[in-house]
Image 1 (cartoon, rainbow, N blue to C red):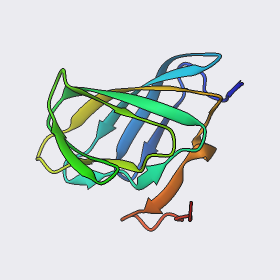
Image 2 (cartoon, rainbow, N blue to C red; image 1 turned 30 degrees about the vertical axis):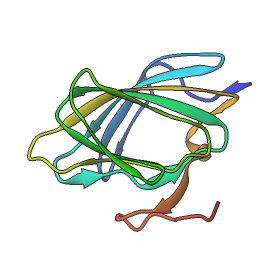
Image 3 (cartoon, rainbow, N blue to C red; image 1 turned 90 degrees about the vertical axis):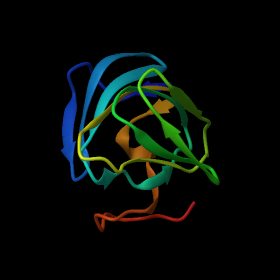
Length: 124
């Protein structure tokens, strides 16, 4: 198993920020903030599943072919190979905790299917 994250890692993206809160051999816990009127790429992962717990705001989540609305204290599980996206359609930040589990945990396991920020998209 490989985990290329370290506690304290952080990054700024066009849609907001992420920060690693904790990690171990086969897990990573991130705090993610999505700016108002922003959304992450429609993506999937070959090596990890994710569990998202909303802590602030109302999130619009694409999970496979479903669109879900989640509020604080609600959660969603994203299996490996499932297309997903989180959007913030409001005027204030959305925050959530992401728990990644899997055999390979790093930023290179993001397969972008659509991206409004013109970042490279890939085919499955």
